[in-house]
Length: 428
Image (cartoon, rainbow, N blue to C red; front, side, top):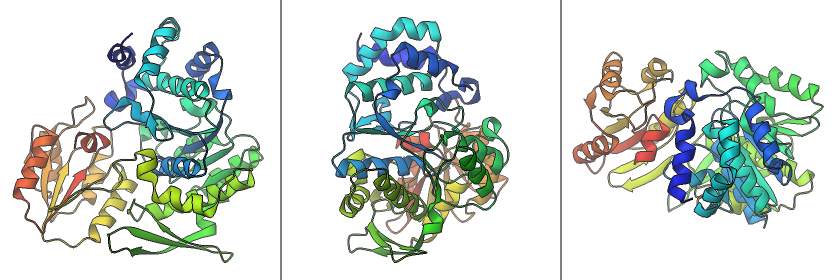
């Protein structure tokens, strides 16, 4: 079977959540458990670290994987969604899974896949687990797809669980309140497996405390241990994030290529997680941790997190797409000096569109577009909804044309931001 045939099989088997939304979501672990059983339970053949959360779980997963790579561990990394290439989801020391392995997996297990009829994501998870077991990784960092309790990745028994920020996203599937959403994310906490919570949020702290108590799991809130102080900038515009221990003399000044202010929250969780891994017997030095964070883009090929795309005019993109993510993006924009702001903007229809549009700055030129996925909101409808919030701009037939228009209109001292959806960022 050729790679393109295998890929077509994966995409066509069932609707993909990232493309069509809720109709593709399968609640429950029955399918993935049956699939893993049929494959010889590859999830039990490697050590793992499990990462859940609403915002920051992708960056956190990449940071942890990069640190492990710097320490010499043969490291697997499973994340979603991908931006350009399906194989971005499954990596070994930063390198994408070979096309040959994807082809062989589908060809060898086609009858099993036809019988069980797993979702696209369930097949991704099984493929990742099979690959990591086959290449005998030392450890794999596994990011949840959606939720936690019923997420397909939740068949693993990790060495450590990490939960990042919790905010309202996928409310139709996970619950309409933060405690309900947190309850789903807390589902990755396993019996006597330590858990690190990156950010203490008063409204949901008790949810995690209760679950950890039930599971007899040691719980650490990173924001109780490390506090972000400030960002220093190098002459080459690289940020140093300075964090200090609240209850000891531990201080970290860390150079990170990810310059979003929200990364300070993620990094607090990463640093406490690294300490937790040390206590579990992982051989990690402070140099491994610093280099892992500094080299995360080279080590893991991370894309789309407050990523600079051009200098003149200054152009950035970010995959933030819910209220908390957009809030952090707007905070970053507010720190930049420019004459005029240009925003290339597209969204998916199942997000809190009204609430997010109300957050956006009125004083900006907007270029509304629709990414090439069924879930994408029609650009004309988006423009009309935006106009009701006093956001002015034109609609464009594609992301490419919207960006071209922004670049044509923007002056050298202006600023262009591209976002609203992971899929808009993927196309640029």
